[in-house]
Image (cartoon, rainbow, N blue to C red; front, side, top):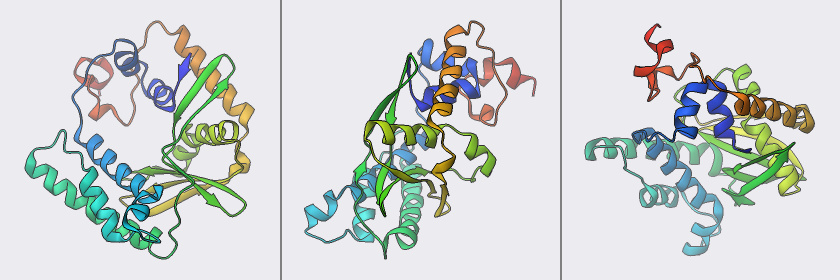
Length: 244
């Protein structure tokens, strides 16, 4: 089975929604928060790739360069013109704050931005893209950007498979020594890092394999209540949501 973090996460949250999206291929309305997240990620991709500094002949890009990248990469799909303008201003403020906290005094280009990776977990293939890989002392750090309005509880983040999957991808696909894995929550200008010594590659792969086997054997795809029910595209046909 070909897997990604998104597929695994979708199934774990709600088998019914997973079936609708990944098996039935039901087309859903494009959400404006997709545009917002994509735009910020794209601007940061340009900022850290080294392309901006190269194009502009700079040793490092400036805050103004970062905002110009946001303007150039802004995606307005899902917004009205007025909403798009307001969202852009919000994004600009977030990136200006990001620059002051994370880039003003210690900018270095990334080793890779948005690199693709893949690895095997038993008879399954796992693949994806990583926001940024940075040199970190004698090793490398994985960085993933989030636009959450609220930072999830630490226990929730620690149970999540995203960074463990990225860790395996970097370790096995790129053959790099990963010394840190981090989320950066852009709305809060906060970085949350985790000790990679707790990552056991074989146990992570076993967990992936168990989820994949459940996915393969699944026949009912029953809905499961979760924190995303309120924004689910299928909530009006879901007995779990209607009964809540």
